[in-house]
Image (cartoon, rainbow, N blue to C red; front, side, top):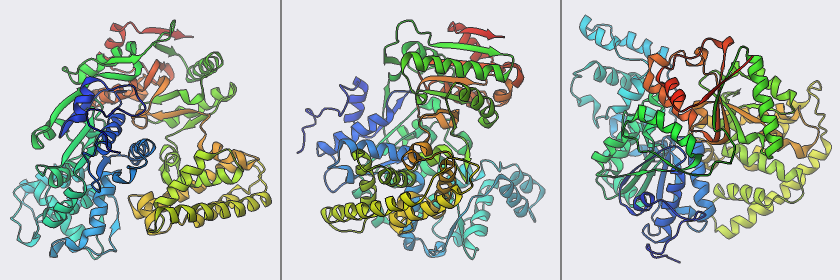
Length: 636
């Protein structure tokens, strides 16, 4: 049933703030919002408004673009839960997945000289390799030109220079380069694509090829715009040159309604080529109406006020946020602790968490330990101290195979395999897991009627679970790391699960990874983590929970904490070992600091340790803490 726009009401929340209502009903919009403002929630509500009122008419779709697969999955799941009847018209994916899908599906539309076969490979060049490329191409140049090429940054060449360059339809007819950047771009494409037997492409190059396909194919342009008359872009502050150029090529001045959301103060992807101020550029190029959301649904007002002190150092015109969270009586929201040794620091943190959990009934996942970098150096002492009080630490930055643990634990394929395993280990009482697993399997089933597919998927899953339970009954778990059978069991189990889920099919490959090798990397990391898990448990019912380690206190970098929130955050390492590079990039470092500070909902505790060096030279940031009345407590 179609609702009238004036009668439409948000899902699962009481109301929206006035600016959110205005942005929800607007056309092309630039929506800026601080931490905790509910940026993803706003997009989910806007999707509901457009789909349920018929403003986005069937069979039209909404295209939602995110920068991380976890964010794309989160947004898709929000819409799926609230609007199951419309979810098939909400396409949520990463920028890389979208541009790669254009190349894979429409590479036949590339101009003749850019013809690309299906056998191309995905690869990534290191800083050293880019530097070697510069050295190779300066031969034969005059000294001035060679100096200009060598002055290019190997760090930012691919993201900022190659990513900003529009490909000519006929490269053999393009004009001679007029700058070192143009020369390097032309040579890069010649060596790695035009003259290569098997092109090796990274995602910047795929983006540029997708841009070329669409620019030179008016019919495809019309088809994309007809399919996606509404486009969302999340975390817009991190948009790269290539991504913005692509967005502009496809959707600017075309009648498409584009909504971008983000926070200028959280632009911590500058190293990856993020634009200086993507919002300002977007508002000019797309004629977007700007909106600013000022509510904060995460942090108490005292923490919001502290965050604002740092926010105005990044953007003097940043509006203050208004907290929608009440502060419990008697709690001190912010403190700074100082220690002589890392051992003493870890013991104090662990003891505090243990006591707070006992007094409040909170769970380990309500706390987080975050640091600027190299959290592995902090892990041993924190693991020891938490273990002494009966708690576990989970290092979300740990490397499992070729990916980080945080990425593994939030991966769709891993969720599917663990869901199947959990259903096999328990004969009932998990209806939500059943729904999640069957829903995922349905998404990659062959094209039949939904009723036929649903029935077949459920029947196949029931039969498979019966067989897997028999295998589990024959396979003994020891829960003893000294009994080295976990590797063999993990390999056998992983093979069984992946064979049933048919993860090698084309549909699954597109669902579970942006690159062909993503599937292989994820499955290898899954097997490694599974073996580690099997060595710790003595019952099959404990495997899925132990694999995820949800009952552990997370340790992660500030970068990995972005987009997350916790009741209490320990901001570990306010010392020179962690913040030694602050003076080299004060703005970038302050943005990182701001992201870390804004993860806390109700309590934020900074720690500093003499063993890791003197207090960090954070200058004005320390002044803000002092001006805010943050207490410094020295532990001897």
